[in-house]
Image 1 (spheres, rainbow, N blue to C red):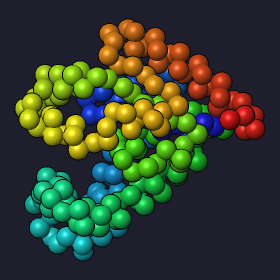
Image 2: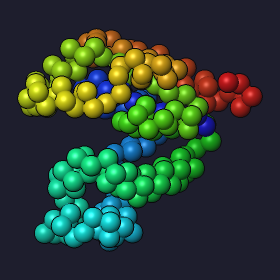
Image 3: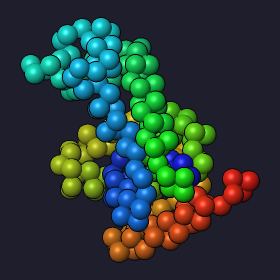
Length: 204
């Protein structure tokens, strides 16, 4: 089995690369999706969040009101640390469960947006960084996600610098290219990943 960390700046096209890797046969573990699952109604995670932040962070249907919670924690580093201390261990435990359930020769891709920021690279056998120029990121966020340019620049600035992401990369996938070129590059990377997954563990 090969454990791969996949990351990239907002608007770099990480979701497209993860989709293409799944097409090739990768087992995808999506940290964002798991982070939502572990605080779903009725979970110990949601109970812990409610105890920490009060019932004001719940929507009328009893689910977590994400925008309201976001407004609280992103304005206060201490409160963000409290939230992370609740959610991150739950996400980590669920991710390990899913990885352990995969086949012995599987390539398990962990889609982790804040892999660089949270210093998580050592958790994986290797790290893939999806890279695009800041200009491309900005264009995609404005044109495809409907953000204002100001909001898009703020979201980009809140993440690790491009250079920091590239420093931890074992493999870089350039996504300043047409989709067909990207597809071809992902297939090349997939061939390498499956070779590594089947190699004796003595190999790096």
